[in-house]
Amino acid sequence: MERKKVLILGAAGRDFHNFNTYYRDNEEFEVVAFTATQIPGIDGKKYPAELAGRLYPNGIPIVPEEEFGKLIDEHKIDQVVLAYSDLPHQYVMERAAIANAHGADFILLGPSKTMVKSSKPVISICAVRTGCGKSQTTRRVLDILRAKGKKVVSIRHPMPYGDLVKQKVQRFADYSDLDKHECTIEEREEYEPHIDRNAVIYAGVDYEAILREAEKEDVDVIIWDGGNNDFSFYKTDLYITVTDPHRAGHETTYYPGFTNLMMADVVVINKEETASPEDIDIVRRNIAKFNPDAIVVDGASPITIEGGKSSEIKGKRVLVVEDGPTLTHGGMKYGAGWVAAKKFGASEIVDPRPYAVGSLVSTYEKYNHLDQILPAMGYGEKQMKELEETINKADVDLVIIGTPIDLRRVIDIKKPAVRIGYELQEIGKPDLEEIIEDFLKEHNI
Image (cartoon, rainbow, N blue to C red; front, side, top):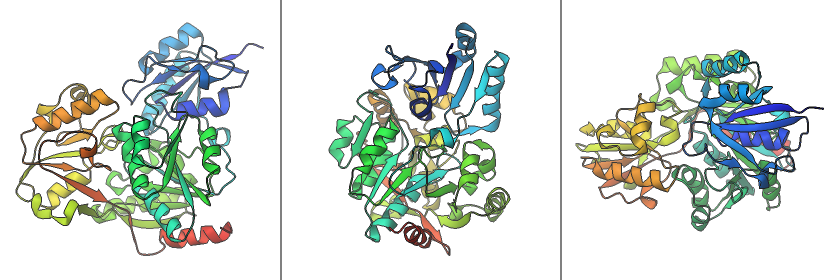
């Protein structure tokens, strides 16, 4: 039987997982190529033979997504599989239209074909958009479980930007592991808060292999720490989805965030302390309409300042550096650092664009909604150096670091700087502690 030819559209995450779980040893299909977008420097590489399996002794090429219509024609592709996240529904259907116009089927693989079953209970933390507060919700769940004496291991959504063979299974327990795996800024932002809690977090490329290693730990519960607004890679016993009233309505208009909204057992409405009542109500009504059985938790992300000294910001001309993905494909115009600058009386938030160098120039061209914020782009050593140079060129009194990690650990900031922190804080009842208590009882943990 002639194998169906497949093209997987991805961004070095869900695409590899879909391949590993459904296509890798499936003789019905031939995956001709992956395409790449969102993340710089992925295209031009190969998904290596060591990970691709016996059907792909030469590996699988990774090419720019812009070429996918041409690739359909050249290779007589039968199926185009969309396998990345945080996408407006219009964007998804544009890709579907291109695939269909070139004669191919358009496929979105769902949970039943891609979720891996664990031998341990799994709590998944997902979201409707990048930047809703998944990571802080994960930390909150982790803290609650550990306070109850439970042993927990977290597994983070993939960020494999380096040597994919070396990154097949990664375990992070201390800072030396970050150096060992040559982690980017984005990766450090997700792993360091777990290390700071003396907690173990896994990541990598092959998520069944990762899960099996995590299960070998002395562990009661596994936490899935989702990325972008992707749905969980694992069959889940408690599904928590985080929403953001600063982007009210997006919970029903982005893929696969809308899926997460409808799959959730618990929906957290985050950032309520800085959102309008009207926007909070939009989110609440959408939850009631599309997932009326979900438990709704009201939440806030109160801002803290390093050392508690808000006076350091008052009257200063500041450069605000925020989490990169939240601002880029997450579409946010600001983050916690910008809110802190406004709240604590900075005299001016300086436009970083005149100081941008290297790839940051093209980042601003691509994401032209950014004008007062510097995204902490750091997908490799070169880009981290460009971020460092951009910060140090800026004519400002103070740098406000609004990223999940302290950038001063990884780049040399020569200007006075202050770091902003934020953690999830539930408002009223029900809260996550009550929900997790019920979960532990239900599963006899």
